[in-house]
Image 1 (cartoon, one colour):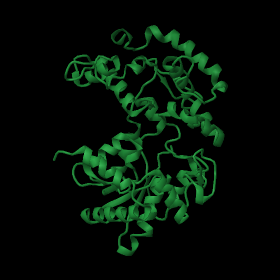
Image 2: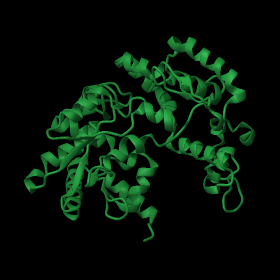
Image 3: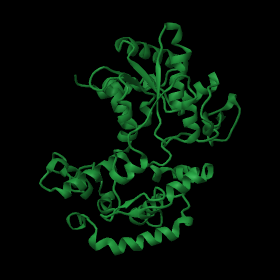
Image 4: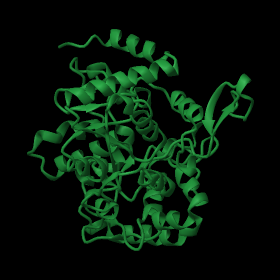
Length: 387
């Protein structure tokens, strides 16, 4: 069935403007619908983050009186902020699953997650095309990076990514598959359908998904996203109203003015946490070049403040393998990866990834760049083809 995107966009905006009590009622209705249609073969996917804790609380606080019981599953990837992991594991009878590979193995065998999922996927598949030019499956990805992809009318595609062309020749593997390996695949062990606390406002991809299926999808990948029409402010308001226990790293929900200064409830402009505003995989580089925009703090700088040992593990170490590609060794080796990105993707005097102090790793990164020059003639690269 063809989707009327304009109508769906309008409907989403209407739902997003509803009051919190109404959103709770609508979410309950979607949960009951999903539970009934799957005959109870469903579970709440809980990462321990604020959004998923709110979803879990709704199932406990409002739906137990309906006789509905939801299993809760936590994927223990080892990548969660420690207090987020603690919060997930504190849930009574939580079921824990684990990925088959460690993050170390993912970086070594598959690649570093850099820039964004779209860019990493494009680089990975462009390299596959260059390794096997006869295989045209990934030729479009290479064209996007080279800036030669065309629209149907022959004009230059607006989806080209030539800004990131240099990544084809980066001295490390690059991939978007980390999330699949660490998060999605482990959940396939659960013989039930997921209920997920994602929201449409978080990305264009998630909004488009809602336009197509709404909160509950019963075709293709069966799943429920009953909070899709919520906003971050709804989540914060819910936590404050019901005094929900969230991970310690968030702190408390406080009322703030337009300049994010704490104020009184009666004159607030919005809510925010007085700790971290959001969490994710603590070593993930997706979007870290955007962290410092609008006065934000770089996620790795924040990690250094809160957990210097984890920061050091993330940044230190690394070595070149037999193919001349950088891999973890005695640490994840991200200091070199960040410095390489800063050298090759900087704009004027602005580094690509700003706000993280790597001075303690300068000696080791300098040695890595010197080694890179020595290895250049023998490295398996695609420079000639992609120049």
